[in-house]
Length: 506
Image (cartoon, rainbow, N blue to C red; front, side, top):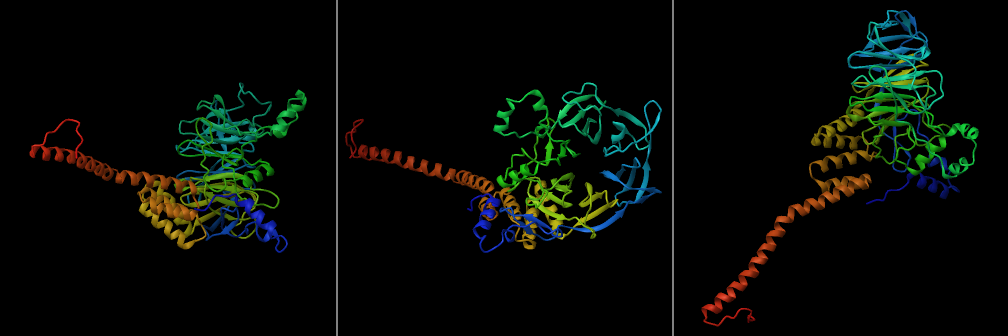
């Protein structure tokens, strides 16, 4: 077995060792903006076959007579795609093929008053068609049907605590299957605000943690109250966006992470999630996102000036998810274990490249990205290679291990540089009880934990399989030993020899 190691540290060490002959940049470079890539266990980018390819651009600059200048958010349901325009305060509705259907601009409040949106920044549409709008400029969240009939208006809670922010500026909103509302509000850094289905504020969830070193804690003990108040760098960061899945987990993204903190996470391969641009929050507000890769899901591991800034997350098929980076305009797709499957995209003017992406969603296997600067939705569709990855994850999740095995074998044929498919092959063999074969695949992929698990299962399986034979042999030995004693006594009795209890047998 190969040993796990800190890939980046080894890379930098190698670069220093060879510094007299080669430039370190030759060892360690940023990926090309036009390539599809992953990161290996050394933290180096490795080119892979394209998993997605550009399909088309849907121009939104003119929609039903409206001049669209600043699309700010979108939401996808089973039937429709909803796009929110910030400047106009209009919600546009399209079908799954991005054909325009209609729009919503005017709302009717419960008291019959007509109202419009003011610089709205977020939209969410529930499966039953209920619309939730973060009406930022009006300091409220509207809950409405598609005809504009408002059933609930959420405003700044009177019982809000822990913040001195006077204005309630909601930017993003989602609701769970029971109608409970979650809101991200600007300048509120205590977490995601929680409201009942009736609009009552119940508190916060998923507050981002703050890392303060021991020396700073020591210094703060001598600070005055005014000095502590000035320490703005040591307050939790705000969420930038969120999605909610069918199991009511909230996926929140955070953009305002410090470069040095992200660099420390990469250098130490920290999988704890203490510093992370994405969280998956359960009902209790705990981050349950799985991080089992060599590095955590943070986007690019290498950058020259600015790290990845994750603006949104798209929840795809078969438990995969895609993070949208606004720094290099890239899309990073991970599986349910936090393994990077592929990264692609780039900043530019070529077809398929982005300028200012603000939202990402899936319709089927296709990826839809809303670009505010281009006033367009850019559509990407999976290649044969990408479809194999998606299908393999689905087969495994459904328990169809034979199909998963076949799909992973095809992936390895198309991309021999990708270690994870061998983990997939190992998983498929593991689930059907072929632990020795699984160990071979895990060893090739350098998956120490899975290898150890398979080895333990193989040991238990071997013990369980051989246990009847061991017990049988022991019973035969005992029977032979007892039989020998009986035979000796019977023989002496037949010969008429006197048998005394306890007498040594000769």
